[in-house]
Length: 253
Image 1 (cartoon, rainbow, N blue to C red):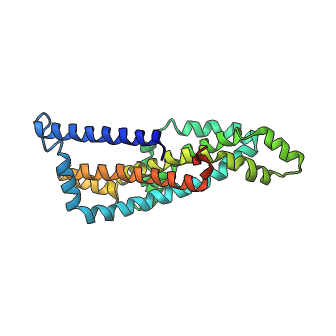
Image 2 (tube, rainbow, N blue to C red; image 1 turned 180 degrees about the vertical axis):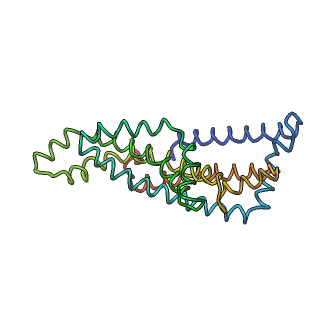
Image 3 (cartoon, rainbow, N blue to C red; image 1 turned 120 degrees about the vertical axis):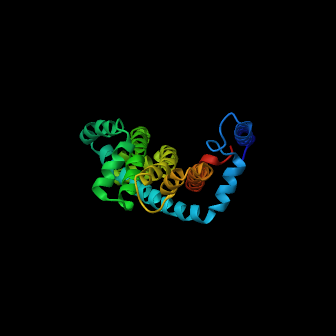
């Protein structure tokens, strides 16, 4: 880690500590009623008390988020390659993809539950819809800006379409792909939790609904913190994978 990154992480830690301190001061000052804003200490204690229960719900949310994200990865790659290879399809379908993003995905959740029931299927579908667009658009943009001179050189050497993708487009699309994957990884957890709010028997969203009904806001905050930490962990996992796949990007000059 270079000095610039160390300074960035140090600044982030200081800011997070300041926000937690402000939260603690607000909760003990009486400005906000304690039952509405439990202190960080109360939230940590609630998380420790419900650790086993939270872990069980976390696993369910992670399974659904992982399944939806995996499907989005597969189908976004397939569709991006098809659209990149066919200009007519690209000009026809890309506006429709953009149009789908004008609708709030959460508004589709009740319909998905109505069509698919209260099992895992509507949760996975909502995660898929949440992650599919940024991945597809990121790959399409990367394919479109792949080195034209390099492609022409390979064509003069007799390269076919598969070789163009394998040696030029796919390697050059990796930075944009991982940027989109970071966004989608965080969205996948949020999408799964939102879908779980509508029903089910397990998942962090189900846990949050149950503790809200009992006015256990310390447990609610514990679940929110856990969702945030899980999203950050997935983003960090993407960073680790990117470093393994693209070591040259992080090699010091």
